[in-house]
Amino acid sequence: MSTYVYGITAASHPALPDGMGGVGDPPRPVRVLREGELAAVVSDAPEGLRPKRRELLAHQNILSEVGAAGCVLPMRFGSVAPDDDAVTGVLAERAEHYRERLRALDGRVEYNIKANHVEDAVLHHVMAGNPEIRALAEANRQAGGGSYDDKIRLGEMVAAAVKAKEAEDGTVLERALEGSADAVSVGPESTGWLANISYLVKRETAEEFLAAVDQARKDMPHLEVRLNGPLPPYSFVEPGPAEPAGTAAGGADTGAG
Image (cartoon, rainbow, N blue to C red; front, side, top):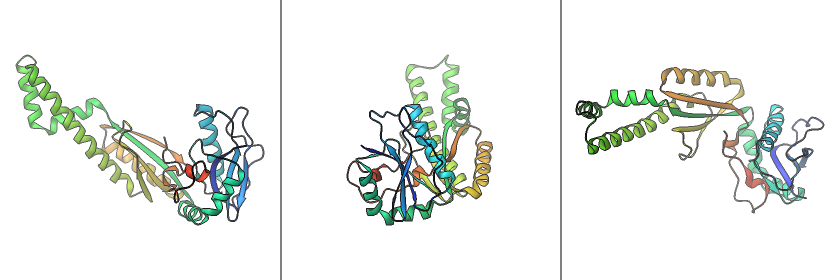
């Protein structure tokens, strides 16, 4: 039977609570596979697994439970190996890499920040900071709305200014928070957000990071800033060298929230 992999820990990691259930309906019992100094938290893989809310939460809950007791390298949802031997084989093959990641991420969590403009507020910023746009908008107003070409031109100018403001504000937000984090991982641009940034933060300094988020919200009220965390450090589990297709170690997650 295929083996579903939730995460990788040190073999010395505290034992799991009895009766933990993972993905599947009914939930598959969670167990631990050990190989040398490493261990993998796994269960049998249910057939036809889909990223439904219940399954995603089950995956997340296992990682949260394991992470509360010590460092865990989280695997992305749907990480499945052919069998238990394939999992322990990858642990043995990539042992040095996983040990290094466990040391680097010990005592740290991930916070994900997403941000977008508050539409009315950013338009005010754009108009206030661009005399050419203000002048054209006023000319159009006095001309009863302006010609078709003038309306198009104004729309293009506003759109370009908003896009430039998005890039500027994304950079400002990232820099405002990076001083309170150990590492930063910028998400893909095609997410629909002007900023999608993950921060690696020491548990002991999390309050400092959260205070920096609150300050950024006050300093940039034209932004809607969403915070998700603390999370397992999905965005900072760098995969080792390419593993064979279908092995568990190919599932290091890179996205949170």
